[in-house]
Image (cartoon, rainbow, N blue to C red; front, top):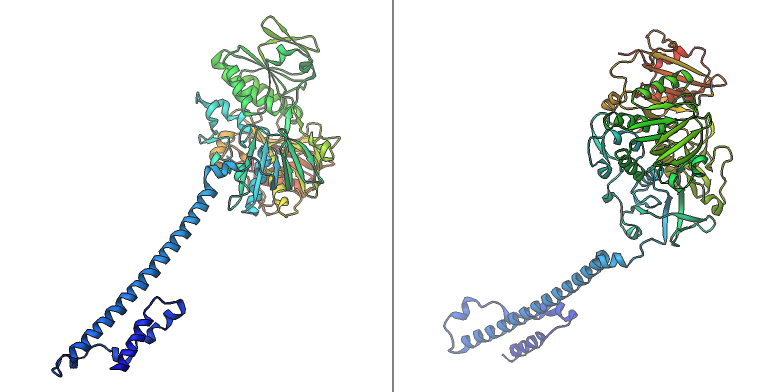
Length: 595
């Protein structure tokens, strides 16, 4: 018995609080041979008191072991719960600190460094941002835009928005396309963008826009720019997509403030809002300029004038509308079309001076004619914004204007230029500068690809289009200059040959969005069995047709007049760069005799 008691004393001692090493050995202590479970022999009769003493001992030892085990288990569990709770608390506080508004607000509003910096907030910049993110999903892109609005498309400002029945269109900026579908002029809603201060911290990168800011200085060697508020930003790669500013006429610039206050240089959202309001308040508006913008605005305002007792005048120095682009016979036809829209068109009109007489503006022309009006819209082209060229040491093209870049749209090893401000080398047509929506899309996309390592040249010929309302429109590609020799092939139009019908088929009024991006060589061209189209005689109705522009007997430009969704064929013809003995045969490729 003394041996058993000694063993039990050892067991009792072993059940004191254990170290981690000792806990692992406790099981061996509980394996003493006399601590087996009581058998039936313990309840049989025997020497009085001996069995009961053994049973009491077992109960005491068993209770001690059980209690000690419960204490150890409870202690370990409580320690684990306290540890888990502490970790959870620390992690939660860290996350709350990271995501709390106070933490975000504590960050600088403008990041000091960005991998991709895009200067300008127009179509080219947005196309580049989308292209960069497509190739590098984690990219962090910062757009610095002088415009207070988020990136938006400009074509509806002179087209569909004017035909809207919504009295709140100037606020909503939503419009119905010719096919009746509604959309916004903004490329993406505000939720698409991240805040500039959060750009360096968001997990998967994103696109941020600094609106109402202007880059005023560029240090090419130091890879930094300075904003108009003094903020400095460094970058790894930079795109200049500063676009252009509307030109003014010298005669108007020389006039006083009274004239300037009644002038609209049409370009931005605020210009649309302002002119739309003015068109409901005055009796006469004069548009100076006979190009795309001037003719589109003239048609839009002319149709509105028919119900609002508004006089709309359009004057320009050319012989007819779009005189710098279309051959003379088609320009004259377009002029008559604009007149039928209710516009007083005055060709061969050169402005000499503008003054205020009484409560009206007086425009004096060089041939002695005078025009009285209440408001002037100047639509005489764009001046590329190249102010950064001086501080950056970038070359400006002396012939075309704009930043001079190579075929990859590079001005320096880590600087690219896209959109209206880029004077680029076209590998098929030579050096050019283009001011159209689709060029901004194509060049911006290419610049974004090259900023992420693509090293691709500019070969995808951008197109442009103009609609004189929902019934007459055209698409063009390449060099379309009325000073070049042209060959026009026309056919009778059908109800399907209108911009409205084209958008019903394609599903979009921004027709460059519906264009195929397949290489021209991939476009299947099958010979047509249609009869040879004929060039119409003067005075005939130019329902639909193809106009080829030639340089050294090679087609360098094509206008598709009321022919839509055939641009890949035109692109292939220009890319091939071949001489054609009979352009009537080439015109068959466009199937213009289809009903």
